[in-house]
Each structure stands twice: as C-alpha cells, then as structure tokens.
Length: 242
Image 1: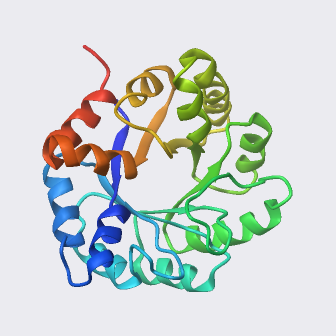
Image 2: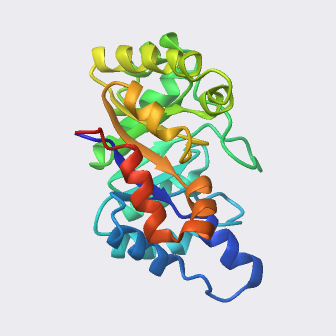
C-alpha cells in the first residue's frame, strides 16, 4: 500500500494573512486538496498565529473528510488545549523553540522520555493518534518506542540536502531508522523539505512508510503546475510502479 499524502496548508494561510481578508480561503483550498486526491490535511499553528490561526483549526476539524493532522509544540499549553478541543485524527508533537521559523530537529527521546510519556498518554487517553518528530537516529527510535507514541515522523531536511549529490547515502540512515521503528511496532511518517524531485526516491527506498506531510514545496509547485495537477504528481511519486 502506498504512503498517504497529507497536504500542509500553512503556506496558504501565510499568503492570506499577508494581505488581510480571506483570499485565498484556507477552508476552500483544504477541501479542494481533498477533492484532488490528498489523503489528509496538516496544519501547524504557532502561538503568534502568523499563518494558521487557532480558529482555522477549529473550522477545519468541522470540514475535513479525510484526516486532520495538527502539528505543534506540546509545551505550549494553548496548543494542548486546542488539540483536546478539536480532537484531530492525529497530533504530531514537534520540539519547536519559541518564535522558531520552521521545525529543524527532532525530540531527544532519551533525555525527554518522561515528559513525552506524560504528554503522549494525555492525548492517547482522549483517543487521538500520536506521532512524534524524530531525527533518523536508531537510538532516538528506540527511545521513541518507550514513550508510548503510535508513530514517529522522520525529519527529512538532511535527506533533502544530501539527495542532490548522493541519493543512496542520503536515504541510508532513514532506512535504518524505519527498519528499527517497524521492528518496535511504530508507524512511520516523514516530512520536511520533501518535494517532487526527491519524494519518489525516498518513498521507493523507505520501508513501511505510512504517510508523508508536505506543504512548502507542494504549494510552490502548484504555482506552476496548478494545485490539482501538483497533488496528482505527488501522489504518483509515492505510488509504487506496477
């Protein structure tokens, strides 16, 4: 079974917020993404609401017909309360620093294991599937298995950078991490800087991949190819050849 594609609509909200008003309409774009074949919608609300606003998340939960994935830092109480209020299909926990431009590292699942166990149990008790952002390091995967999380999301920026010069070397640590995660019965997601050029190679080589979450690159490509065609191209990239 091919991995699912969850489209991150943060960039749509950024464009809307840059001018005021409601153009582009985040809710309409999310609905169109689903209609064009996306398997889910991802949002990453931050405390300053510089792109996705908390009320966007509430409205999306009422509308999304596939899966809603909310990413964010659980050390922000406002985020925790939003997730418990909206009850998404999945929450992805990311160790962002205050004011961080974009996510750039995974959890230290060893030193922060006790904290992660507590916050993950809170979300799982509410019936929400939990994924945590991790680097492709086997020790961190083993630590993740002790937190109670359902899934990991492999942070793929390093893969994207190294893919340009040496694709096989770039994907090797991710393959090792995925094999360990599968052995430990963890679901495997991936995201960050995956794009039309590197996604096919990644999905072909990574075993047991359940879901990719892609926003920035997909929205950039949509400027040239159109949103519907772009989603189809990305879906094709993660679909194994017959």
